[in-house]
Length: 303
Ligand SMILES: [Zn+2]
Image (cartoon, rainbow, N blue to C red):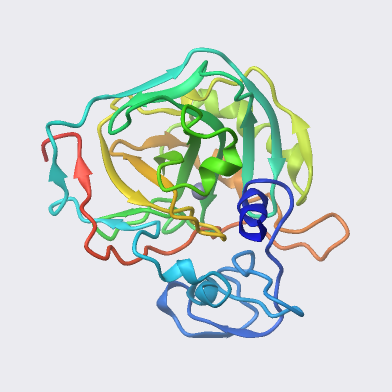
């Protein structure tokens, strides 16, 4: 049950992350000692204040070295076009958003998920998956931020729309622990013109600046955050934050959406820390790509 509670914490306001003052970190492949400016929030509490960077998560979560970990680098030339993959059907017909919150590692918008009004189907899926929440990963600079990379190239930001298999599992927590329980749609964000529909979201960020804060956020339809093409890559992977459950069928959309520099900068105003703590900017809240370990990435489109 401890693991499952951990799974829920990773998605809710409770946090398994703490900050260490001094430790060795190899985040992004660079040996580093001292205060980790790259991954402060990416440290997991083990016992007695011992803290771990992503490269050491396996000490607390052995699954971190498992066979289907996420994110990955998608080598577009090695992805296999699979004509049997169905088009992805995104049925976000109602505006069922509830709240916006600062989880201490991202900003998250949660949805009512008592029925299939806001769900995805088609693609590699046999039944609909309900939207539970979406959140973002971003960098301190535009040269990093996304979790998935394409041909080695990161994007400044990545949106994750997290869905669960409510036909097969009774609760989100149960689905998060099962190999076919979750479906996450990843959308890359790049810098360009202002994204009009994103303003409602970026204008709400000031309300959840501190870790643990939450505000009402109703009537937002995330359909407006999708690109025009739903061409995708798909592979079997995991959550990208502890407890790193290998429960996710990933759908990574090929076409990025664009937001303005000003809009992205509003994400960088958020803090990893609570109001009473010393302020630490929320950014670089991504896990680096993990080994493919023989997995095949399928493409819904011909290269
Ligand atoms: Zn994510």
